[in-house]
Image (cartoon, chains in turn red, purple):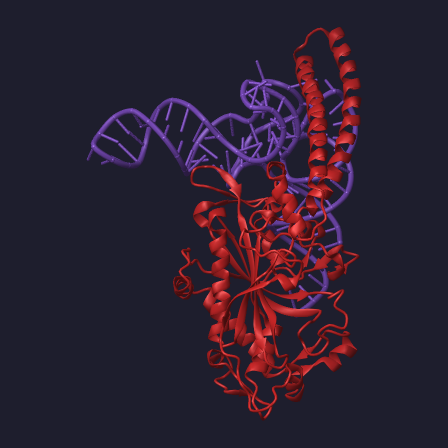
Length: 436
RNA sequence: GGAGAUGUGGCAGAGUGGUUUAAUGCACCGGUUUCGAAAACCGGCAUACCGCAAGGUAUCGGAGGUUCAAAUCCUCCCAUCUCCGCCA
């Protein structure tokens, strides 16, 4: 949610920004509604003020006849208040609905575009591997190795579920161990920042296993409840299954005032992500690219407003460091206005090369939300000068495990159907060289 | 799931219907003093919204209600603690 004052002061920027993101919202109408809200608020407050003042008089007054008269008068004023409050409540209801629709403004360097066709590749890394045979898709490799079983999962749970087995499971935990080591090591993080020339406090990440379910009102504050069609909802308990660890990591400091000295605060959360994938029927049906349930390691950070851009650069640098360490070719993509999320100020994705698909596919995303989420979550920081302001929040994938496994399977596949294990992961897999 | 207790500013902790505009202490900020610091003393110090300002409104876990007036009384909900039950 944006600040209504900011919207009032920058109505053209906000209106333009919404249009660029393809969000249909009438800012002029919102401001007119806000005028009405303020007018009605003033009326209610003036009446309340009168009641407060007279009530004070009543308590001091010794004359009981006058007392009775004043009490009688206040009774009618109270009815007036009730009526005006109801009017105000209705106005606020409409006002809030529109407020929730207003998207975050975007960083000046974000390209303008209608959809993913407007995204811009800002850099690439790594050589695509060459094969002296036709590279297979991950599902074929996985099925042959008896490590990916969608067939049985379909019977047990339906389409877009899988049984992951054997060395692929070990590989999953190898990735997690490898990454947790990086993210909790100050020296490694300092090195990553230095290499990319990012001036930032290399404070380590705190590992978290967050709740996998969330209440609707908290989901709303995270600006992630919509689209509801993509969420699993437990009706009886009115709870949602999270679509990302971000959803329950973000509210960890809800209604708190943090201290400037403890900033930045960085978490790395491990959780499954549950997605209905509504609207993607028939898309990516093979293998484990698009699942109803997949595990993910997610970075969520809280920082001072003036540091949030560098913080996002830092998170992307960590993502790149990871892909370089396991030697997977990738592209860094600046997401355009039409393809980015409503809460985003800037979104950077990383697409990793997948030879079996003959394409770069999305494996990472880094979202800078500025204060869009913290305003509703009420997560603030007390500056050393005593001032209190909203924190900025960043969220970024460090490893969507399923898709990373795909990339490893397809990039490291051998002619005989076995898969080489990336050098840095061997020590987490009993020193093995191959998956077979 | 059952029983009991508790929930007040950054923290601790008074406050059971009307001078409470939420006492007091700690922490924090500014000042006096000092070569400098500590101590002492003086002052400041919750948040949001409205207002050019003076000032006003709201907030004592949350949502409703009673009353001219609610931190205080009533209802429901939530969280924490203790005990019991169930359970990995």
